[in-house]
Amino acid sequence: MRVCWFFLVPLAACAPPAATNQAILIATTPPFATCTVSREGQVIAQAEATPQSVVVQRDKHDLSVRCTKPGYQPAEAPDKSGVNPLAVAQAIGGGLFVAISNSAQGTDNAYTTDLQLNLPAVQK
Image 1 (cartoon, helix red, strand yellow):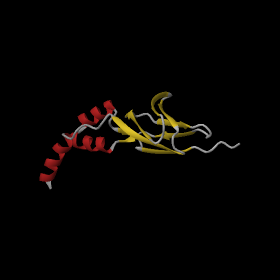
Image 2 (image 1 turned 120 degrees about the horizontal axis):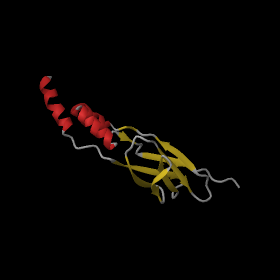
Image 3 (image 1 turned 60 degrees about the vertical axis):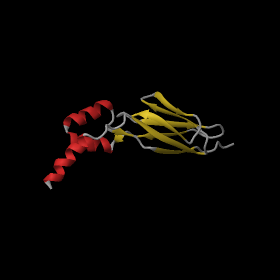
Image 4 (image 1 turned 45 degrees about the vertical axis):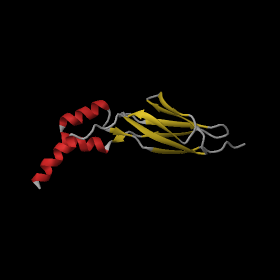
């Protein structure tokens, strides 16, 4: 068993770094809505016509996704910043230095990769 641990720890520490950016697929019902992605009140990405992927930088702060389409009520959904499993594995294998490095770069965070928002029709 010691032989396995001896080889696994260096391999985990030498794994490629976790990405600082992440793609999020935004889909709506009905399709072809326009969506904005915000973090701390600042728009950081926009989907012109759903379904569409946007790329955001990983961060410890949550995202807010707001979608609009003429004839439909707007819809908004949070996307909570969670823990990136790859960064956790690297921290276990690489120790404190890797954990600090991942945290400083924001790569220890991750968002939901697929968001689905429903826009109710405007009642006339």
